[in-house]
Image: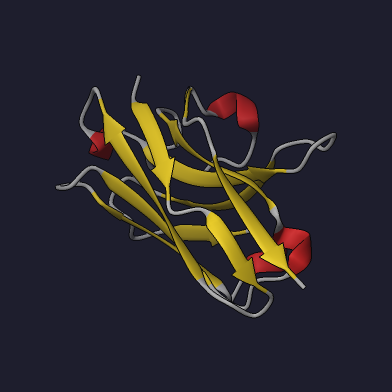
Length: 126
């Protein structure tokens, strides 16, 4: 499994931008498909964006498509999420995750991800 640590969260005003980062350690990141999820209190964690091991295939949740960009740098063991035009309802804790079964096919369900970070808080003020 990978050890994942997110960073880059913070407070941003509506319409603003933020880039999240996730550092991976423990194994070579290219063995894994990667994704970002988010969660607000009392709601289920939801898929935001994912990509295959080489970054050539990406997938986005409908609400973020066109505004968020997921990317990875396997040499640096880093995963990124560039977020723009942020909305107050996107206030949440954002998690990065790694999936061994999702290396070539992007997975969207929580159970298919075996490694999780501790999360980073993103707050979008109106």
